[in-house]
Image (tube, rainbow, N blue to C red; front, side, top):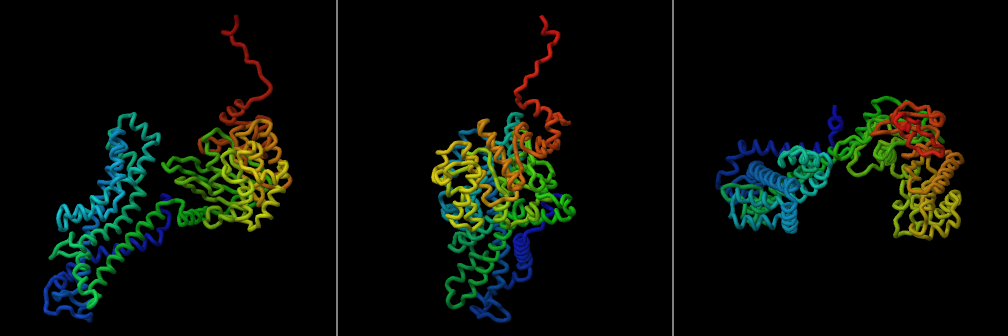
Length: 560
């Protein structure tokens, strides 16, 4: 069973679908049951509410409740037709411009930008005034007025997909433009479009009813909710219930569409809280923890890009208290994706799934633990130059976690940070905290970042290639500080690097990662003895520079 089917439907989606179902039933049944009462003229005009006429009668003696219920069919049909027209035209225009010539795309996008500046209802009024009053002109007017917004949104979403490699490959292979759009572009934006369609249906209902209310929509003897509001307006003070029925139905239908759209957004988002709870339920059915003594346990971690490509493919590992675990591999192997998923900081659009993801007793798959995550997981990023905001002084940035998540005062946080900076062998901590990031060297920034991450005394420190941007001497000093902190504080460390030589010098155990998979697991002793099995690990070791050069054997063709 797929992940989406295994998840529970959000309550808002269930409520919205049920409400829309009720409207559909009314639209089908009402004209058959109450059609005569809604259209037959009787002498019982302007009657007050009674058991025979719950909302009274209008100026021609027709039952107001019956007319309200019967009007449901025409109102929904008109709104659905107008929405469908807007969607089809808007999606075709906004999507096909990305498979056409660049000049045409720029011209169409500028036209779309210009038309989006005007409210859709104003455009609909202008178009309806040109086409004339009536049911069909109203549908056409609303459909055309909704095209620019759908085209704009579609072009934005399609533009993000059109630059992907697989789209470029399809272009090179000569895939026809419309097939390129329908096969490679449209499926990747269908989820957000579905949510947008549900929400836009509610706005279309209001626009259709507005046109009928001002006399440019449905004409007598036909009637929709907007027409009923128009007819009941003169008697709004003497017989207010005549406008209550259509108003309630409009609100009911709008809420139903909005709930459906909101529910679809939650259901289609794998990172939503409901989706996370479903993942937790699946994890619990998978059995108890296989490594109860481990501080960190990861089982079946899978990370996928927005395009659906698998970046990390079902990996599992654990980290013991006080252990340094190395994760080594080339760029793009999935190391940082693994680390950010463990810290629950995956990028927008990236989805994560796992059977088990825990830090001691903290279930990292469950929602609502942001504060505890900030206290118990420390992060050291790869590039110290881009980690800090250049417009702010170091003190405000380095003490932020302590002030927000530990509740320390500004003075107490600076004192604690000063101690941490001292441990990292940074002289004059107060002066450093008063400086801007550009006034410090890369090594100083990295050591300051490590000190800041340790202010909360985290259980786990994730160091994502913390020495890559540093020169060799500073790199060695940072590694010594990490090793000393691990020894003195017992902090577990997940150390990520593409340099297997650095990992060999620091870590207790090593995992070798390639294309999202763990290809080999080694102890530090095995790595030092070069007791490795996988060809990729041997290639990484061969690429590690050493001070000893081995002469190349002389081949026969080299001999003079």
